[in-house]
Amino acid sequence: MSRMHRNEAGQDLNGTKQRAFPIAFGRIAEAARPYAEILCRRWLPDGHRETNEWVARNPRRIDHRLGSFKINLTTARWGDFATGDTGGDMISLAAYLFNLTQRNAALETAEMLGIDPYER
Image 1 (cartoon, one colour):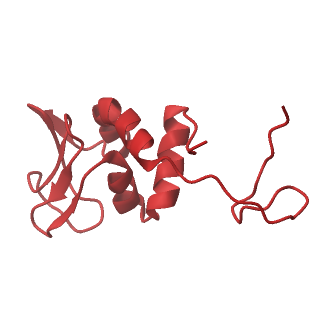
Image 2: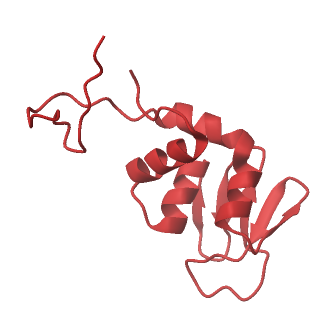
């Protein structure tokens, strides 16, 4: 069976518009959760583990002290208690940290994990 490759616009290589596969957000988020600490070490290297949380400075603002920006390493929920910014998984954290859309954050996270990002 031949696998058809599509570009971002959902077009096949001949430029014909095709229905694109949806992003498997839930599957990617679940696959990333066990790797939360590894991803935090990569994305927020100035942080450290405190019990089941990663505590780091928020790179999106001037943050002089550790403590208000935390990621729960069990649930992957995160928040900056100084600004009120929060999220529920590693995809939303990647989107927040790197100023990506949720879609692009999911694609990047899936690539890092080596998994197929699409519902098929």
